[in-house]
Image: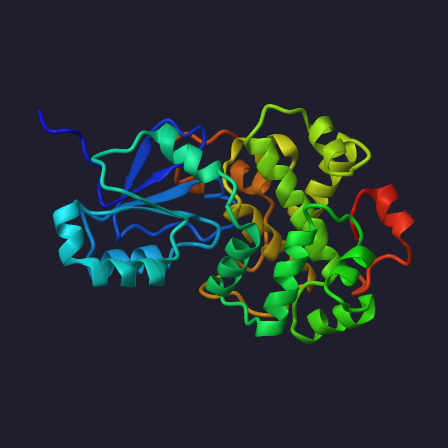
Length: 306
């Protein structure tokens, strides 16, 4: 009996036990949160026509794409086409040909921390249509790197060799969220990736990252993203986290640049989207100021890294 094969497209979603078949003619929901934590799997051995490419390239922001390459003999003939597809669709992961990768393997790939987080974030921002000049990309990359060990905007400004005021002006002039918000988000993102990849308690993760306690980190997560740690721990991946933050920033006026493609008028929280059962497409889901605060002691008290 031949092995069971994945169709050209399928979705995998929490709790990551099985696949849901999709067609390029299917319309994925545009409402934020419905697909957060899901992954779109493209088996190129079963379909690599222009319609498949358009479907993958036009997927909603925050839905990572995992590409399963065609068999080796096809891959040699189609190498230029495959490279074009990879360039146009910005896949999260590329897998060798397999009739049907296990859901556990796909879930592991979704929650795996990027080797170079700053580079992945910048690639995602450009894919989502943000215009970042070379110097701003350099500054953002350095800020993301610094967020692993730095909890205050003053320390970030020193790390990029700019004053807090000059740093704030650069981001404001380009219609981007203020630097303090970038730092807060990057620290929360790192905490979420640790939640997804370890059994450590929220308290231990929070303390290891310089937050006073788990309650402070939980409140920061809810304020920035509209999610609680239990929600973020069960929905693997980092792309949906970044997308959630961009939509929150756009909703509150912090992001003035337009995002590529159709975007909803209101950035719902994932909890709100999960509560809206009629449009649920997956099989079995689990449930200010540009310079920041006046002094660093306030940032430390709030655990906000502002």
